[in-house]
Image: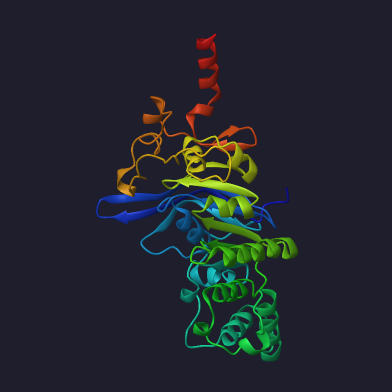
Length: 332
C-alpha cells in the first residue's frame, strides 16, 4: 500500500446548541492512498457528509472541529486559515456533490465556469484555459464538447451536468476528490457511467477518492476499502470484499442482510430494527446497543473502539480478545 495521501486522526466535530455541546463526529480515523477509493457508508445522519465537509473545510457553522487532525500529503490542513484552505480547495482537493445544480451557476456557460476554475488554480492564459476546458469536457464524456462548451447548465441533462461537475472537480488536477452522493439523483445506467469515470480517474491519474453514499451496492462495485459509519463513528473498516462477504459488526451484518439477492432461495428481507439515535439521545456505551441482536451487558456500559478482526476492524466488544478467551474457558 502506498503512503497515505489523506490521513484523518481522531477527528471530533461538535455542534453547540441550547441543550449543550453535541458530538456530531467522535474519534474518526482513516487513511486514503493515492489511486484508492475509500467508500463511506451509513444511514442518513450517520455523519458521512459531515466527515467529507470537515476534510474539505466546508463545515456549516456552528459545526466545528474540536479535536484530532487532518493531514494531506503530510501537511496538516484542519487548522489552516480560511484563505489558505481556499487555495487548497479546488487545486489539491476537488468536490463532487449530490445535486450538480448547486455547483453550477445558471447565469454562465459551462465553458466560462470551467475556464474561471482553471485560471484560478493554474497559471494559464485565457486561450490555454479554454483548450483545457474543452479537453476536460471530452474526458468526462460530453458528446459534441466543442459546441456544447458554450451551453448553459439548464441545456444539459442531469447526468451530463454531473459529468461537468466532475470536470470542474478535476480541472486543476487535484490529488483528492470528495464525492458526496454523486450518483443518487441519476438513473442506473448513468450512475454506472459516472462510477466508471471515477474509477478511470483513479487508475489514470492516481487520484484518491472519498466516495460517500448510502448505497452499499455502489461501494461494492467501485471502492477498494469501505468504512461503515453509525452515529458519528466508524463501526467497521476494511477491504470491500472482506466487509461485504464477511461483515463483522452486527450493524454491518444488518445492512448486508437487507440487500435483496437475485437467484437462490428468496427469504423475507431482514431489516435493522429501530432507528439511529439523535445527537442528543445517544445511549451510554455502544450507540448501537438498543438495536443490536447480540448486545452484551458491557455494550450498555462501555463504548468499544475499533478492534482488529483479521484484515478488517470492528468497533464491537464481540472481538475483544480477553472476552473471547474468557468465553472459550467457560465453554470448555
